[in-house]
Length: 293
Image 1 (cartoon, rainbow, N blue to C red):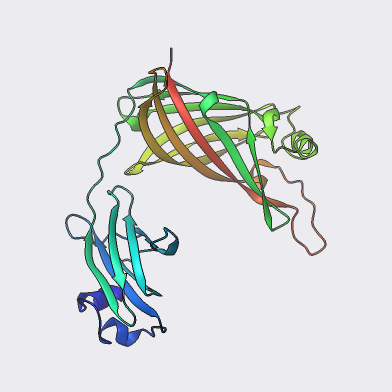
Image 2: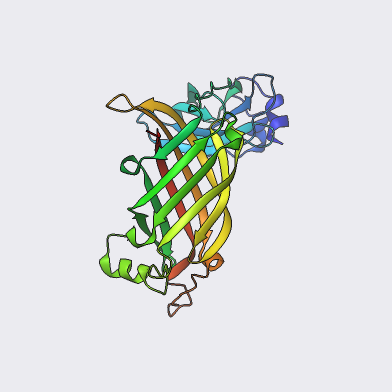
């Protein structure tokens, strides 16, 4: 619908077209644009951010299936940033007048240059510059954050990245939420039961390129005596060099685990029927790897 409206609009000012269909508060105006790729196809789910002259974000949002974006904002001068996976970010200044339609028209994003992939071969995870963290809901309100302090891993990068393989081992007893009593409980038979299951292991099955810098790494996670298939939503960050000139590659990855899938079912219910510990755990990985020496 926005796509058809924008096709009949141009310039700014006047209560015709889009403004005739939108109630604009006093002291506000309407900003719009349509985001296209280099062959003039709409870019769906592009992310837009509108900031004021102080750098404060006023509006954030995404494009519709037609690549269109419309927002009502206070009058003033703004900085618009448009980004989408696989494209170079776009930035522009725009002024929104009271009761006016400020149209950016068609914003064409250019294809981003892909980061160079690491050289094929064996690479080791660098635990000193990597982290494996997690977040869990607590009493239905707050979030508890923690990490595993001891882990190791290796990646065999193939000539064709999709044929690569990864293996990571985590010391379950190294769980750390900065509260000893809680960590001891998490190590007990109620949760990780580290006496019986001292490690967690992940073996990848496949690497799938999702476009741009995004990859999906699917594999088998063994936790608490149970093995399930999980997928790491991965962002490749590129190749660089450390302080001593060593070659490094880096990535970020996230996934969500459900405790019941791994038979970690301990639970206490609060008086109002809310679980003390959430059913799902968000895992966040920041990884650097080095060529195997």
